[in-house]
Image (cartoon, rainbow, N blue to C red; front, side, top):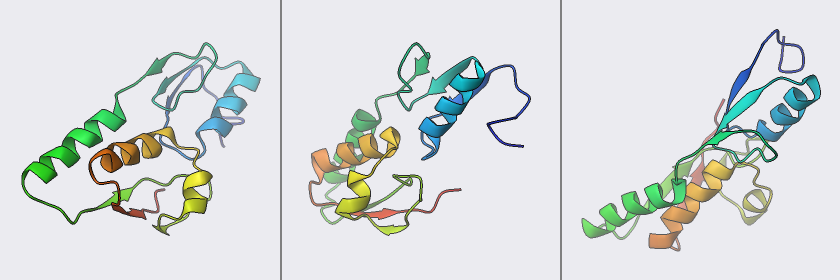
Length: 122
């Protein structure tokens, strides 16, 4: 069973999945009502959000205010292949996960040259 044939009446989507837009498309084709927690699904799909960039920026500012100058971050996957390891320009350019992108922007607001490693989420 998968999103294409799961017996559901409605769905709450979590937007930090690299498969997010494929799931939205599949559910729209089926006419299943949905709400998204982050992920900017578009159209008339309701979305519940937080400001990931601002939240991460505040955390990074706290680290800076404590005197930390050499920091790194571990992120969620950026795209459907869930490429792991150091973040490359190619992986970042192929990003389909708004949550990961916005969090990284917040960290870079404070630490423009921050080292980034992508975790292999499930």
